[in-house]
Image (cartoon, rainbow, N blue to C red; front, side):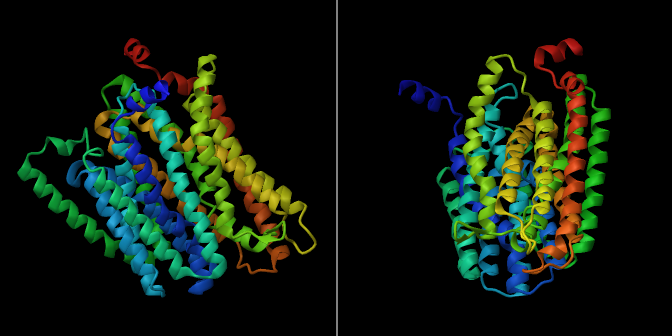
Length: 491
């Protein structure tokens, strides 16, 4: 008991509060992420192509705005203030969507995406600031926080599936509204514990702070109609996100090449290489609410032991693995390292790519064993999600922690944001692959199975190839990612 108390006492102040805030902050996103395509097609009668395109933009804005969120929070509003302001927009967005109708969907998404897009980076920055760069507890903290986020996903997906089977969409979006409001309550209750600790804004005087705060709030509110407009132009917006991603990549490459500190330049180089590899992973992963969901609804036998499995519940396979595996992995990694096994960042990234490749390659195998009506047995998509989830557990938490380890202090915000922008880019790419799927309806599994077989095989073998390349490059990446003593010797 005393050992447990000592461990709790050594947890940096605010870390536990951020864990619980993360759970409630995730609920609204979980509902929209798992239900948007189904709501748009079944309730609002969007075509599959239009619904998928909006879902792609949803992911792109949610993750892409993280780049700007890191900058806005660190220099204008403060991470704490921006997080709460973003949650207020999410509450308003879910409330408006619950009213029903196409126009309410666009305005609700405009509010929600502005909020969620800007405030997630702030939560991660508040957490990472509570640890020094050399503090090994950082990885464990992000694994625990990631488990909290997936607990929010688990609750959100479970409730979404229940309302989906009842076709009660207004009730579902009201639930999301209440969940997000609770995140605001927890943040206010822990206001001092989650304060910013190390940002450029802290150097500003009171007058300068008020000026920056006013500018930041104006930007926060002004972004809503911009997002609303761009949601109406989903195709053009997707292309714009890809262009911005390329430009950000060029900027980061230039910053890396021009950086004077050799140690930090080598770390930034490793970051860029690993980010390119992770783009492949997240492109496949973002197929879950798009192509994979359509496959599950129309081409998978979802009757298991006499009960119908709601589409959102299938995504709970992922949440369950992360919730259980996140804390467990902290102990596994510690045990492996005590035995001298170097299960480091390059190894985790490589393994993640290979696992998600296998997760996609089992689906064509399942299609090959489909029943006469074309429906694929549920076990195949179950296995696929298990493999994808283990891969996510390897790459996502360590990806966030990697920013604190590899990014120079003055670039932490933009590099955290660019990591999430990369995920948004993957969402657009996933929507393009999902758009290759022809219009599908229940009872037409045999007609669309060949297309799914082709897409899943192409994505699976592509990820496998990139994973193998990273395996080969592990020794080189390890030379770039060195500890403090080795870095000083190299310089």
